[in-house]
Image 1 (cartoon, rainbow, N blue to C red):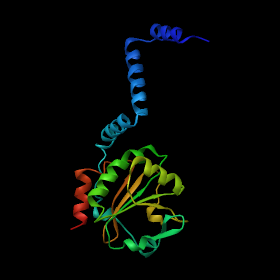
Image 2 (cartoon, rainbow, N blue to C red):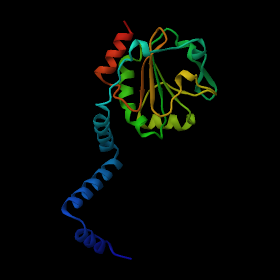
Image 3 (cartoon, rainbow, N blue to C red):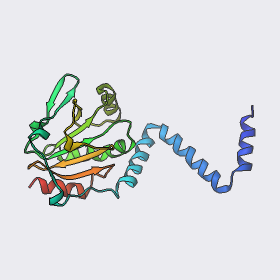
Image 4 (cartoon, rainbow, N blue to C red):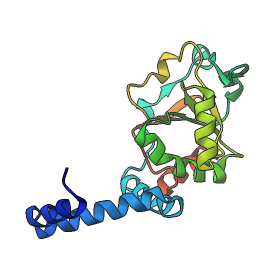
Length: 202
């Protein structure tokens, strides 16, 4: 088995100058990501780069889907034994997000959602829905310091909220119209988002 010194010599001989630089940057980032403090700074910076160009918008009125009684007749859960009725959110502005802890784009947008929630959580119903085990989700939220309202899926999601990818987010008006649907991560802590919220809260 080659010694560490022999491996280092081989690496120096076989890698170009740019490849060596790339290798060094990669290992430095890997080390920094292991340390909690720098990890948070780096992940936040990456989130900004990825999400800044992906702002949500309002659908044209003719493309906005209308929720009906059956769509509101949807039972979620706060926990394994505590039901939550989506019908309680009639006539409220709703931010409905389908996500999972194992989904990188979902995790990437959570800091933005947290900040949006801190700003508008007393005026808008934030509903983050997952089908994962509550214990896994609660551990994840505690570990990362998120204080977001998480709900767990019931046996059947209304067809109007069907989605093929995570994350998928619906913004619903007081009149029960889906004014915005976004598949994939977005920057929810943005002027574009707050413009939608302010318009719906008038």
